Picture 1 (cartoon, one colour):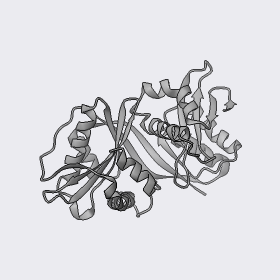
Picture 2 (cartoon, rainbow, N blue to C red):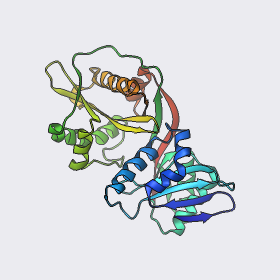
Picture 3 (spheres, one colour):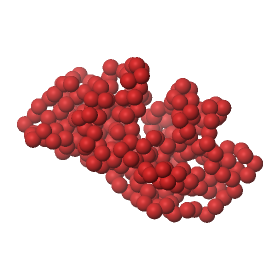
Picture 4 (cartoon, rainbow, N blue to C red):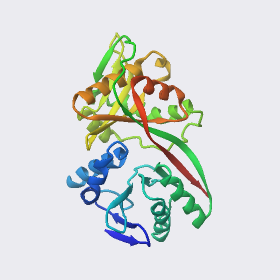
Length: 303
């Protein structure tokens, strides 16, 4: 652990996600929906570390403490895709600014910052003040939680668990997901940096039963919905992908509704992210009973 003290908050950088969870678990559990990304990644990488799977040296986990020692914010740098943006959860404004100085002092190249507003904006803006450049919005996202599920109008077909035999199709649809999402939001394809899981990771997800197809009345897959396992009692739906030729038929609404119902029936809360620039997906999820929790952003630093 490396600690950086300021006149206000204290920043603790850790390399072990298990140690991070031990230090910040209560803080994450107190707001498990807002914490969903950091908590789920920390749990996954902690399990991998316990299994002897090495992690990149660039990864870190941040605990922010106030002068009394209470945890008042967290963050991480564990993205597996370039430019490896830090992901910040809500924290005091002065902590977000102090983090920018800490990253500069550590000599880290930061070309993007993701996570909760206003922390990401304050951190990115301070980095550009120190190093030059400008901040651009790559994507505005919104985190939603499902309240009471509102079932959509039924459509032909059914939800069907994807299996390891489906890995090639799942790989193809994962690869198309973010590019298509960019187009639907009016951005050039490839604007949103993202991870396309490798075959081994997709096989792991398929083996864990976390990916579903909606199949039509002929048994043909027409839609894919995934879910991240619960962390602190909250599961996150995603990705949600329908190939272009199959859109507008209600597949996504019915698949997400059924997956959400299964999660709630198992005793977990359900959340998901939407792209604020995509009115279609926002309308679909609102109709199902998802309600906004917090706004986030993916910010790019241009030099």
